[in-house]
Image (cartoon, rainbow, N blue to C red):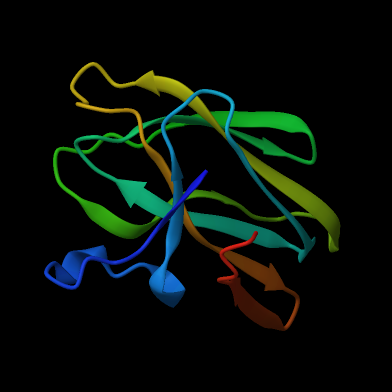
Length: 128
């Protein structure tokens, strides 16, 4: 996946922690291991966005079509809740596929929100 930096000329591209990661080719993966009861993937929806597959604990959860006629930065594009308070792994796979109206197939991972009983933290490390 490729690192994205905000464009100072366009305030709408304000990624969390100043960066995000993107991929357009099939097979690119982003994986987060976490401890908690809920997870949200914050990413991008837009006219050039593609389709991603999401796996939770190694099990296919669903495909996420990120196409939108307008740009949405830091949008909660996938979430799962009511998880056991245990260790989990979330994997996002770029498929290289796109909605028929999309001009591209980019998949952006900006941040993750993890909920633990009694607390909430946000992962912004670009290396994740």
